[in-house]
Amino acid sequence: MNNHLPSPEDLEVFVQVVRSANFSQAAKDLGVSASFITKRVKILETLLGAQLFHRSTRKVSLSEDGERTYVWAQRILDDVDNLLEDIREKRLAPRGVLRISSSFGFGRNAVGPILAGLAQAYPALEIRFEVFDRLVDVGAEGFDLDIRVGDEIAPHHIAKRIAANHRILCASPGYLRDKGRPRTLADLAQHSCLVIRERDHPFGVWKLRSGTREVAVRVRGPMSTNHGEIAVQWAVNDMGIVLRSIWDVQELLRAGKLVQVLPKYRQEANIWAVFPARLETSAKVKVATEWIARALQQAPFLNAAPAA
Image (cartoon, rainbow, N blue to C red; front, top):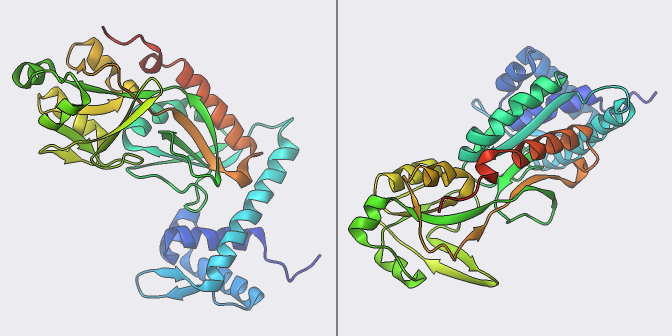
């Protein structure tokens, strides 16, 4: 056995320090002492003959050699996980840490409840779930899987469409009584549009499709937000027109609190499972993706008929 090779344990410690940007926080996350973290990083640096971090009193940042080591460490640890999963797949349930991300609204309302069922079905999985108001670079940020609403997928990721979805324009009956109903896309310029700065939305531009024709419409209004749920609530409160996913407004349409406008136009925003190419054969990712896809395909907020 070659004692001059980095151990997976030391690589795991190193990766956790990178993600925490702090030795003490990495120690808390791993349930060990700060002195243990310092010792293992020092051993790794000695073995590699390189300084991996620039240290300050508050945080640590990667050196140039550290950046290269981080890429390799993630790849090596993923390969070890995949080896174990491959051997165990036929006789053991998937196990280990599974890092999943999603957006604020969809993560809280849809993905979170689904993951509770996944955790019960596969108790050997340790699920770590985080939500963001921006697109996540899955591999670079240490996630195994991103559940994403929207069809903009970077080419270096693998994406599987797990549910159909689209965005529609809608407003409250009260707003339409006061301001009138838009009849054409050009009419939107005369309306208060509630603009969302969220993940894949280009701010202030709504890309809408009617049949095979796609049109980019620049919109404006006195109110904007980075949180889709806030924009929907504003729309319910007669503040303007919002472009929002059918999964998010379906019940409000059925209850009559919102009304669809310009129904010939929509924006495709399907739901995708996105993961790094290196995890294409990961049993954990495969099980989670299939579980979430089945749950979404049965979800009433994606499958109910739109309100007339």
